[in-house]
Amino acid sequence: MTAALTARALSKRYGKTTALDAVDIEVAAGELVGLLGPNGAGKSTLVKIACGLVRPTAGEAHVAGATAGSRAARASTGYLAELFRFPGWARAEEILALHQRLARSDGGAAERETLLARVGLTGEGGRRMETMSKGMQQRLGIAQALIGAPRLVLLDEPTSALDPGGRRTVRDLLVGLRDQGVGVLLNSHLLSEIELVCDRVVIIDGGRVVTEGRPEDLIAPGGVEVETSEGVRRLPDARREDVPRIVRELVAAGAEVYGVRAVNGTLEDAYLAAVVGRDG
Amino acid sequence: MSDAITIAGHALREAVRRRVLLVVALLTTVFLGLYALAAFEAFESLERTWGGGVVPIDERALMGGTLLGLAMFVALFLGVVLAVFLTLGAVRGDAERGLLQPLVVRPVGRTTLLIGRLLAASAVCAPYVVIVFLLAALITQAAGDFTPASLVIPAAGLALGVVTVVAISLLGSTVLGTTANGIAIFMVFATGLAAGLLGQIGDALDVDGLTTASSIISWIVPFEALYQNGLYALTSDIGGATGVIVQLGPFGGASTVGAAIWPWAVAWSTAVLALAALAFRRRDL
Image (tube, rainbow over all chains, first blue to last red; front, side, top):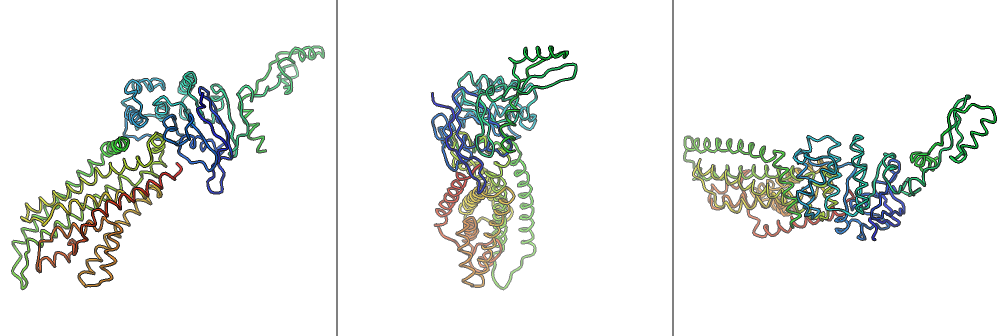
């Protein structure tokens, strides 16, 4: 099956500044890929090249087999920009109807209602943008990105303005997209969100991919924590299988053991190791 | 083309919802009211005060031609203001505000987006200047029984003139921010008008250099040539000393630029829009 997005040796320079440097990335159909990296790493540039807002300096990108930025590629792409705005005078229904016409979607009112329901905006179609909270506008932005059943959805910080309930709604929606075979590239600073939902994570820094893999593969074990009468000690190199031995040795040495737990690492640890470790 | 019409419809809805058209209609009514007051007062005072002079003057034609020339200038000015404010942020301005990106990523060509904006602004501005001018002509007729030599040429010139300004403004919006573009377009407009006035002075004083420079600038910015052409057509049937006085006044056209201005203005607007499309296509958003 054709990948939702492929980029090969993709580079972008703005004058003397290199935003992307020979990046290779692939998002398979039905795959949720999280894009991580510090500010200015090149994440948004990558997303913008994929949806045709920015032209690459070198390399190539394809969306569902079509050159990124081409009409065919844009017809297969749904996009939510990090900094977007809908006109304040327009109603939610009108925004969706406009994008339906431009995306040549024949879903009509049924598609609009379904999309509004999927992002938790049922019954809000008649509201004007200027009366909507930032979170509601972000939900509508996500609904707009899903018009016309795109094969690739590019979401640039889609949950930045959402409350915890809204984030859960978006997580559920992303899982639903994966089940429908839609490829999703999720650019976010919310590592916990990415850890919860993404199949694969790509970390970019300085315009280059510094590491990638499944979250569980990137997250290193965090050692074992032991609470004894002398306090809490952390054994960073120990693993879960070592726990019985550690307890035996401590008891044999006369220590009173109150608790032992294997500590799991987090995606944040993996991210910091990849980015800060590299910078340092 | 249907995409361009969709974009145009969206832009027109914006103009209606943001009450742009309402404000324009109200202020235009105020202008036309003032114009009517001035026209009736002027023609009445003409009857009270005008006496026979040494040179035979058709005072009614002089007053009517001058007033309608003024109305034509105001219609053009208001039409240009409208054209500029409807389009000055069409590309860079809307991109900076995040309004453009959701539209550009749709399978719609960037050129189509520009054509849509051109259609929307033209659909507002061209009828607007025609309506204002024709209403002013009706008022002038009612106030002083003055009928211009032509209504069609000035009205069509105004309409095509504001379309050329829309095209310049769209081109400017691809490279300049909103404020800078607005300033630039008004400066171009003022330069065109100044060139026209200098041309009239050149004609009056028989200074070939001024006339030539004015003519060249008129062709570079065709709204000015269309405006001068319209002014000339308004009073082209007024002869003798009256005709000379009208044409030398600030709202009289001393000469016509010829029929070639029409295809030239259309080709010029198309070329400017093509340049705008080229600049837009190359712009990273």
